[in-house]
Image (cartoon, rainbow, N blue to C red; front, side, top):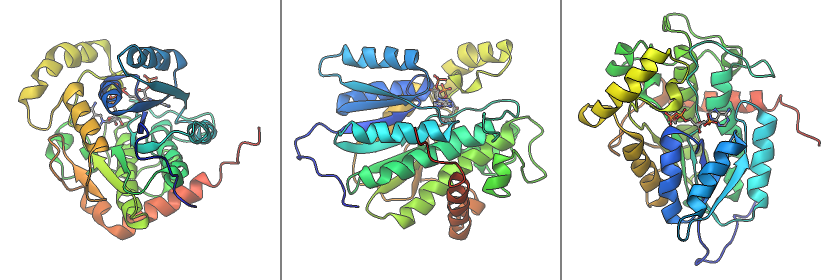
Length: 312
Ligand SMILES: NC(=O)c1ccc[n+]([C@@H]2O[C@H](COP(=O)([O-])OP(=O)(O)OC[C@H]3O[C@@H](n4cnc5c(N)ncnc54)[C@H](OP(=O)(O)O)[C@@H]3O)[C@@H](O)[C@H]2O)c1
């Protein structure tokens, strides 16, 4: 399929998912300085709020698209809506994500975290790739917790990604020897799916730039919303103010600057993985094996192909 052509002077449009909270909300506001922002989120009221905030700024232009990443049909519909907008798409940031502390299911019966964090964003990206111009940046907000050797993640209770297969992940099954904390294996495996996607897509589609960003530990965002009230209070009022002082930690403001800066700048090597300071870092030994990341991508595609197309 030919790539879309827009005049060089057209205002670029940046797609961001999960722009209604935490890192994504801050990043959407940053992106408003660089062109049109396509806000992709599940909650129409929250989307409307961010959209209004951007549109109230001089030169601000935001457009919302409702999309529930835990529902592949909703994702496909949203992708079609984004294409139908006919905007000069310039790049996309896959940022939406959850870290539930119990195993939950989508209405279709798949693991909620794995679907929301990996399968849905994969489906959106794959559908939009043909509509992105050459050299466009496609970012996934990843997480170092996929690496069983990453010390701060291990200290927090993670045991790295526990991938068996995409089908097993969708069933909520993980390699034995994982975390004792509920939800951690699903989260780590889903975030490894993001990184595997970046690495494999970079080889498959060299005309685009696929980039992984580990935004640092950002205490106090909505990611920990399932934690008990005492922990949420601690994260927001005690840990968040300390974040600028601690290695591997960050703040939504800083993470947003990094993400918006990477998304809107050129050139980046495709397949690069940046840390919270924008320095290249390495993923786990497992995900760095091209045969492994290609397998994750092939199995993800086969799984998504089982979801019937929406005929409405
Ligand atoms: N915070 C950290 O320490 C940290 C560290 C490493 C990586 N990350 C990654 O950074 C990203 C942003 O996290 P955050 O900390 O900013 O969390 P957050 O404040 O909870 O924001 C998550 C965003 O994702 C959206 N979202 C959740 N489920 C969705 C669904 N089913 N469909 C559509 N959108 C959905 C949320 O929408 P609602 O507002 O409607 O809930 C929200 O906009 C995530 O991918 C996370 O894995 C975070």
